[in-house]
Amino acid sequence: MVDLSLDFLGMKLKNPVMPAAGPPVKDAEAARRAAEGGAGALVTKTISREAAQVPRPNMAEIRGGFLNTELWSEMGPEHWLTKEYPAIAELGLPVIVGLGYSAEAIRELAEKVAPYADALELSTHYLGDDPTPVVESIRAAKAGAELPVLVKLSPQIDIPAFTRAAEEAGADGLVLINSFGPTLDFDVEDGRPLMGSEKGYGWLSGPAIFPLALRSVYEAVTSVDIPVIGVGGISRGIDAVKMLMIGAQAVQVCTAPILKGPEFYGKLVEEIKEFMAEQGYSTLEEIRGLALEEMPGESQFATIPPEVIEENCTTCMLCIKSCVYDAIELDESEDYVVIDTEKCAGCGLCVTRCNFAALNLKRPGGK
Ligand SMILES: Cc1cc2nc3c(=O)[nH]c(=O)nc-3n(C[C@H](O)[C@H](O)[C@H](O)COP(=O)(O)O)c2cc1C
Image 1 (cartoon, protein in one colour):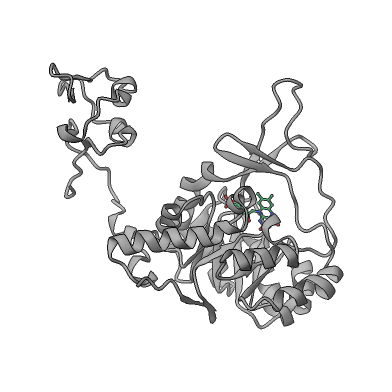
Image 2: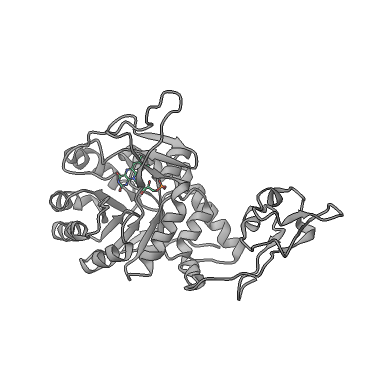
């Protein structure tokens, strides 16, 4: 039996999957669907002192990812305080309330939302070099409410500098990453940007940013002792497992439930469980941070060429097509591929392209 429950900053979660601040938690009705879909906790759409004026269009699916130019909630704090938060608090899941974007606004809002929140998440979306605004936001949240304070960081910053400053300022946890950008895409027929923002720029999320998120979470967990939630590009169970293995305590998802619906949370939970059961793990503690032990710390030099596991090769030719060193060809028998040791540079691309586990690049100390 796999048990995905966890205690996160005093909150009891049945599983580590939660929506990230965004449209999937834009109001109480959306939060209810997330809860029914299987989320282990709820994060609410970031609010600020005023309702946001959001340009349109503001969301687009693009190849490998997603663009948005949404800001914070288009509903003001009074509406949230009278209508949305009370209904969300009834849903029976831990609630992390999203707040932004200045220390003054956070100070004022933290106090007001405290009765409905188990924790606060400060969305800073700050891109500069100086962590002062983040530090001030944390202090303001701490002054406004006696609640755990999580800080959400963008990937474009010096992560250890910000995580250490956040920890020193009293943050109880971190959330990485916010969407990446600014970025641009447009319609090739009329040349108009996909986003309605002033410059047509948008912020990238979805699978394209997953490796960026993973590296960011890695830098966060190795730079501070406070817990980290991993977010960015998670679209299947194995992505969530990787986030946990790099040291995240829990995960958040935004783009995937936008595109696939609120059932996605439960599906992700099932996929995490399936992987863990297959690999013989039964609790989150067993996989948390497991990959940290494998982070090299120095350059690696794998054995050249990759080994060909002849019985697995289907001669699909995928490796031959993409071998930039022209080192792979079919064996005379045409039953499997062979690699020219002289030509092979050991780049490893063929191994990652093979869908049949027919190629294996031996790493030092590994298989
Ligand atoms: C349409 C949209 C709206 C978002 N709104 C917010 C927001 O209000 N506050 C915030 O902190 N992050 C916001 N985000 C960022 C997400 O919470 C998340 O950090 C980012 O999209 C990466 O995760 P994903 O790849 O799973 O979407 C938004 C993202 C999208 C796509």
